[in-house]
Length: 157
Image: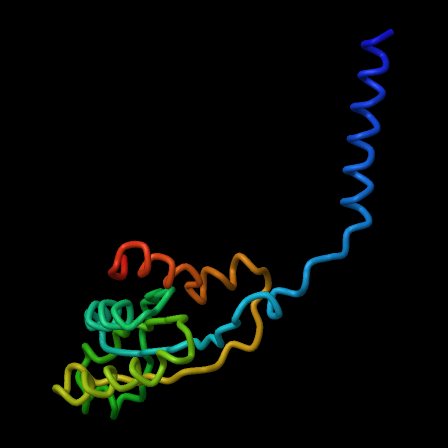
């Protein structure tokens, strides 16, 4: 009978733990627990094979996500004669980063566009109003950046 009493006692304890969890108050919303960084989407459109420069520089500044899309432009015939046939192949770079990094990204893009006719392009930014899911937001805003910098003394890539 001792084993039965022991089993009943363990079941009561477990029942009590489950009851406490159910009755516990929910955690505060994420934006009240953590500092929320605003995010932006930076779109850069350049001639083909120019994207590597932007990927490297945007990553150095602090971009959390870069994606290259290959595209073809279909300008009128007069524009093709003026720019040349190679100007129709484009790289579209989609970058998501904290909004605080956007001015530096656009500055570097502007500097690159001023180098030569081959490095011309367009760069602009759009704010991101909402993201679904805390894990997705943490990834896009690079929430662990400060932890990596503090633990290692330098930023990891």
